[in-house]
Image (cartoon, rainbow, N blue to C red; front, side):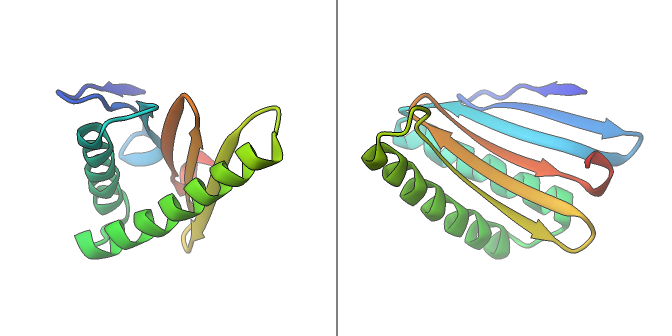
Length: 118
């Protein structure tokens, strides 16, 4: 397991077994300013490119869709008055790779779980 350090307000953890990705998680605190949000999105896109070999356009497109869903679910959670206010979405891809994005009022996390991390 590796703690990833950045010069921006993004925290991350990378777990591997040998050369195989088990899990990657990036986190930011909320509310986040525009700079932190942009850095988080860039970091997530780079992780997708490294983990799945996607190009930048596909990485950004998938993240944009997931982010829109999470914000919609977070708003709905607030409106319902849920005890735990959160928005979460996940995507599953061939080869056993899963992506997850969760947002609360205090933080946001993006997770990649590799086929060996299930």
